Length: 145
Ligand SMILES: [Zn+2]
Image: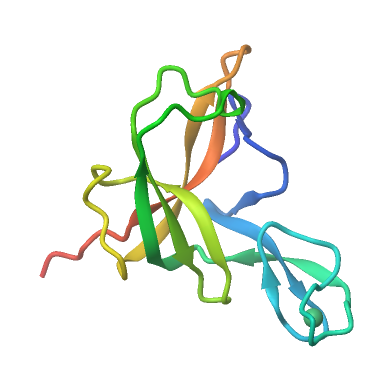
């Protein structure tokens, strides 16, 4: 969560309320279609392009698919050093499919259909020494019987 020593990778994509992170998307005020990232107007062709209002999404979802990125991310990411990492598509209960880096397990260990939980984690450290936070999804911890 953002602190004086951490900043979001992009403003407005996620927030933290009462210690709980969530992605910030939008919901059409007419047809209810959800979007991530946020947008100002609905683009559902069956809708009239009504206003879309900001809404918190998740924070849990289901892993739709994933892969391991084994090549250097674009310089924009600033990940230096870097190591191969998993990236996946997570279906949120609001009907939005979100792409995100995956965490909380080795890159080869994710399973399609697994319940996933949003986490905010450092992507890199900027020139001022601040952690640059991004959104990731981790497998929901198994409860021990
Ligand atoms: Zn709409």
